[in-house]
Image (cartoon, rainbow, N blue to C red; front, side):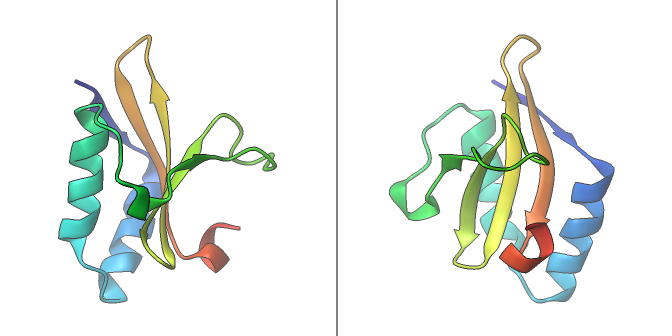
Length: 92
């Protein structure tokens, strides 16, 4: 099981997402699946970020069509780093 680690930017992004009316339970479901090292269903469109200098070696999944989660799994220390969350325009 992975231990979640929240970046400061993620915490700010999360507060903004809640203000925008996003359902925090949807995000919690995804984080739980990731912490338990279970594969995400296809609907989340999980994929590696390959052409981004800012998000090298990270992954992204879609909680909703325009609500994303950027994260990184560090297997050596069993940590799930939650980097950013927000819309496409917020993150890219």
